[in-house]
Length: 340
Image (cartoon, rainbow, N blue to C red; front, top):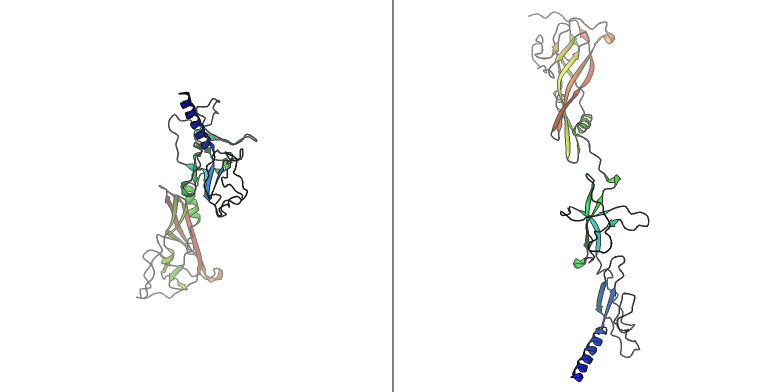
């Protein structure tokens, strides 16, 4: 019985001794790198040798267990059995970083947050401490109304390689300089749009063309191209406001002390019409000549009144009216009495 127990014990020791020896792969190489400071984890690399070491070349086997304290091991068995030059040193590395996300902590969870570290105090990310004998480090939660985002730790790399060290989501408030200033209001955009309006100057037309005649009706009108709505738009991302200017009336200063207000551009005189007929909507008849006036002519002006409205972003409003004006001069001559 004692002999049988001794035999079993000896066999067990032999198996354990054999398991303690380093594994060897003929014609291959292997490496272990555990120096990913400050994050724990190891990189393992294996591959085939470019050259098989010749027997009896004097190379000695490495000590069992590899070189202690370096975190690396090479089972090549010879100095000529080196790693292939084409091996990518970053093939087993992952590109990891904190990224903003739409993460929301579940009810009852203890969050982590980012605080600016004091000089020499280390990192500002304070992870949650669970099940530790050490006292947990208190972490700040988002303040009411505080601008910021929850950041999660994500890794990318070839073949789905990831960092095995888990890091919880952290709350990182926006820096003071990152706060987005409030954009312009619709009313402010409307003012910008109004300032961009380019209203045309009125162009005067008359009949008779040129010199006017005493007691002969003068037809007054403006070119229709200058009697149209003009619009301009001001916008920022997400908000657009348009201002519209519309001509509504023309005020004529005829130079003889008469003011004529026309609710429109006036009607153009048609060739062949009766000269004694007055304009249906905008005209004047002089009763005295312009003799003795500066330049022997009456100074005449036409001033167009515009209304300006705006709308956008669900709002609307109106600005004080705008005006455009142009001037000319009429020489008025005496005429013979018209006969039937």
